[in-house]
Image (cartoon, rainbow, N blue to C red; front, side, top):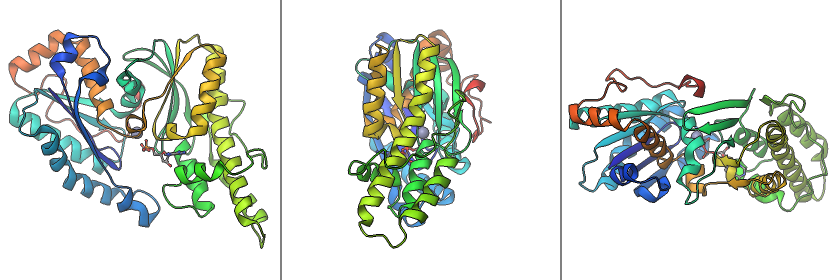
Length: 355
Ligand code: KG4
Ligand code: ZN
């Protein structure tokens, strides 16, 4: 069995995967999950309107041992995987220190994982995983990028955000509209009642296929709120229109770049993942886009779109599958393994091209 841990941001997540079965079969990785659990910190950070890193680390410290015990129920895993970065330094440090001590104490291999690669491979957990090459749009509160996935470990980042992530854009505009944290879900609920075309907000760097940008949108929404909400009646209708037009701009910006990339690269699948993939309008529009290019859209269920441990296990198992012989040697020596030295540190910045 493989134990996997994710603590890069505000979710403490742990899972156990049947490593032996996963190495003997090529079936979808989701089918080998034995246990998974998560502890979300949304309530802890809610009063502050955003994630407080120090509080997040303390929550991980308290919750992680409990979640590991809950998942293991006395069983002994033969390997452990943990998120090394990118993420909040203190949060990464909790997961990594725990994993190192756990691996050292038991003499089992430790596999450090890049969180972004986790999101990229999250669709591998689906019962029917995507065909490659694929284009992946990863959108969350911390990251927004478009990547060409040719195969495992063969990635090319086609576009990245210059400022805010898409989730941040949702959250910050929601705050401007007076909606509760985290704003993305409440803004999108309200958007269903509004007119998407009422306001035309900037879609950010429309001519540049390599960059997303959401800071202009935030400024435009703030200005429009000042102009439109001054002593108005039918305030609710105006707020719904603002929410709908904001959602239109964010989803439009994301899919404009996706369309450009689909025109340029011949891919077999479109993958959509990250917390913002929970957005229904984005899912609908991505579905239409994929259909127009005659390819399938692959969106993991919400529990594997937001930060989770199953995607960390998916990366580790893919790596072990590729290096089966070497993994045998790691296990046999009952050490931490040559690629996972004991002085392994957290990598708050860990671009995917450094893999
Ligand atoms: O992946 P995630 O749980 O955490 C990060 O790694 O960031 O993503 C959380 C982000 C938040 O910004 C949240 O507002 C956004 O995803 N989000 C949504 C929706 N559900 C979550 N944004 C728009 N519409 C939604 N339905
Ligand atoms: Zn994430």
